[in-house]
Length: 463
Ligand code: IDC
Image 1 (tube, rainbow, N blue to C red):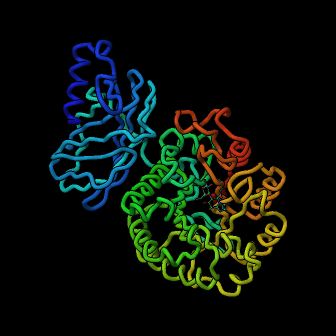
Image 2 (image 1 turned 90 degrees about the horizontal axis):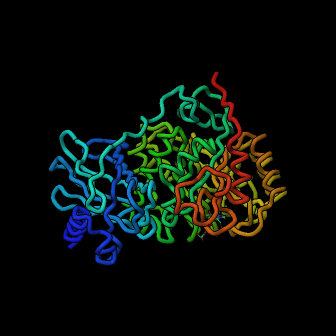
Image 3 (image 1 turned 180 degrees about the horizontal axis):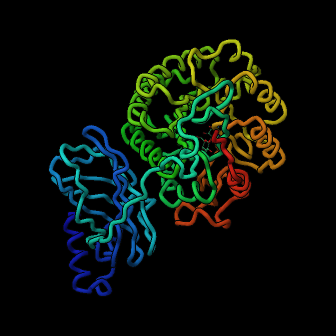
């Protein structure tokens, strides 16, 4: 049926009948034939028997409010294993990717970023005959190659990171502070993470890192382990191509005991660690915010998950969440001493500290000031607003926090690089439906403040 519709749309265009029949002649999403399109196909990584590819569709014709991309796999051994940002199907060598509700509208010049993991044997040639709504897409352009040392990007300058004393250190064994942004839940805001938004994050915001918040519950990982694993890997590659570090956040939240997700964590981290072991830009965060659970239980979880990562990727930095929503226990009436006196039995690890500036003030800053000389800390999430993610931006408290983190060289990621309808989001609602992530008009008050803090020069030590 679909093929018939595409054929019909193609014939209609060929005969110049679009005006006559109109889009209503085709049922379902408006399969209006585009006048032209471009597809950028990039193999972002390849391993024994498998590969991952990004497919960027740019609509060069009239706006469409529904689209289907078709292409041919040139090698019979190639199979689509898992795709994202479209509904994917394969019949023989013919592949069809149909728009999802959130990316079905493509204005003239607008792009949609899709991707998939595939399997293959042999040479793995690129697909051919890309067509959008039946119209051939010509003019494929390659993405720039991944970062090389000396290119001036954060990963290019610092290389692989490690923990030295209480600091995060670069390839010259010198302390560095990474400043960057966290995604919102990728199950909800996937559309915000695409070529244009990550270009803006790297070049315009000059962000050092992207934290990839993969919720486990709330329609997250547990509903589609392979799909979320693929999407996380795709974002790791997109960060790498732009010289940014990627924090892979196993975003446990409710329930608060990370042990509830112990088996899922082992499965997930075994897979992402094996796949990303060769990369310099990956940091693993094994439990977002333990809550309602003792430090002993969190430590036990960490000591079971860390060896799984180490078995595949021995050298990467790992961040361990702390008690009381990663408050070092403070939100549960405790403090950093429970960690100092009973640290996780592992090396090259850091402890997460999270805060929301309007809710967490002097007592929390005092705890961080004390703990910073005893524990390697990483602020893998913080907000400028209240702990609900909403409310008024607290500029004074945010500034006090960021000044403290700068002084202590503690790395941070802000919640969120998204257009969620809440004051913690950096972009105004609706921004992710368009292609502009870099002009000041798309920023919220929080986004404006964070961009001004993050985009200042890093001056990473190089000797
Ligand atoms: C919030 C989101 C909100 C979502 C909620 C439930 O901003 O849109 O509905 O989660 O999942 C955290 C958590 C983070 C929270 C954030 C704000 O790590 O998931 O996001 N927050 O409440 N800890 C403290 C605050």
